[in-house]
Image 1 (cartoon, rainbow, N blue to C red):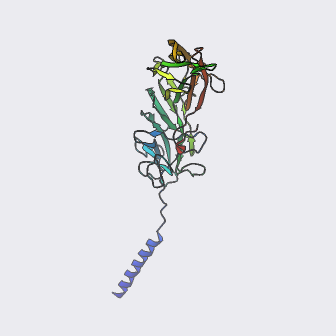
Image 2 (cartoon, rainbow, N blue to C red; image 1 turned 90 degrees about the horizontal axis):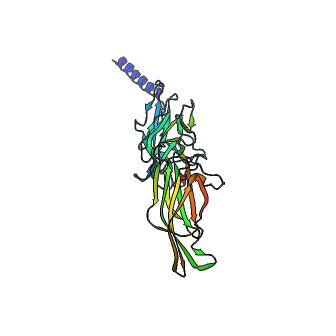
Image 3 (tube, rainbow, N blue to C red; image 1 turned 60 degrees about the vertical axis):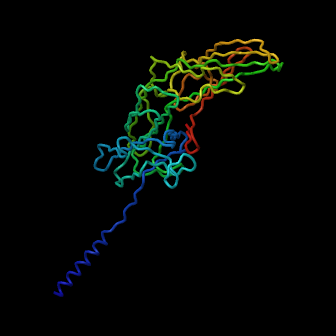
Length: 369
């Protein structure tokens, strides 16, 4: 019996030591984050989601797991995930310091060295595009004033967060580009008093203004392809390589800008607040129509009043600051038209149109391209 006890004790010790020998250190889980910020000259980042009052965008993740490389899995689910700006505590923020961009709940990188994830990120304020790893399309869409559509370069074959380095936040490089154009129209009177006789004054009243002959309904079809290595790749158009969109030319839009009398001073009046448009070729029929009244006074007494004065401005004849006519509204660009009316000569003066990059939001959500 004593010998049996010794044998039993040895077996127990052997088992214990065997457990100690097979222990190993688990590799810590690494949460999937997104690198969004001014990390490259062409960076575009998320727009303000006015409904939720947060800066956010959408992302789909396509997992290729070891042993199942011939088909992807929707790692974020079929609908994708909402990615939001967060502070160091992980709370969603709309201003101030942003430490990370993260999904609504944590996801972790696969630990297998042979697994990877492809990411497609976008923001569409008023619509739902058709999306896959290699295609992004919008069909027969009418662009409304507050539309915003942003699309990030596809992040191919990522298996870990990108090293911050010069990046603003750690994670999957997410470089957004605006897919629409923005247009602003400012109008003013070039003078309201006679420079040689201050008692003679002029009042310019804008009666109406409209944009006609522009296209605001169309379709977009973009494609992408696997880099076969870790990195990002911009989308390419299956149609017009620079405009991206194919307009429905059968139904040009007519957009009313002013429908009631507006008095113009020498300081610009914004008759078209910043509005989204479909990128397009500006044809000869793309016109800004205005009607105005000029009232002349001497020592406060009306000496002449002329109303319903028409003016027609063909958009593709208006130059930019470099002296070249703007014949296209390009994606990611903002066009600010500055127009003056001379009440004496009735001449319409076209200041050079400012063609600028579409910027948006605070510094950490700035758009640069």
